[in-house]
Length: 136
Image 1 (tube, one colour):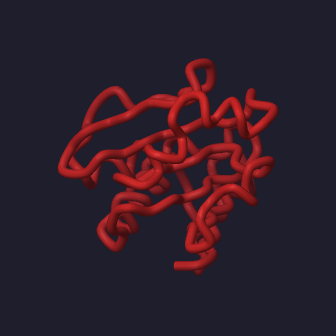
Image 2 (cartoon, one colour):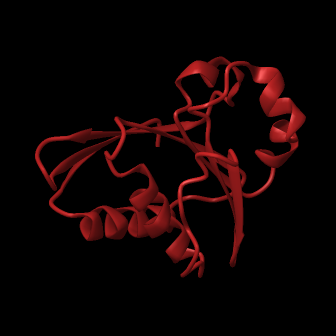
């Protein structure tokens, strides 16, 4: 499945609509360059579950947990070097409940569930993004 977004608001709306098709527990991997729209995607996704404020990139703290009608675990693995660092924060237990959205999952794919959803966000222009979904 592919979608072309023309603005951060369209990316958020696409994610909002997709969230209605996802049930917990589930792992969603968000890939794309810096500034591609991974956090905007997460903002729209979380809004579907009643989380209206406070969604931001967890770059320096690794994980944010948001609670609405569903628990959303939002990870940014950019700064991590090995899986032991994830284990130290209880990653394996956390992804077994709620919905986990993981930015920069590339170095950890082998540790993630086989039924994960991979969403690739590719910058096409200043505001245009191609959003491609695998395994849904």
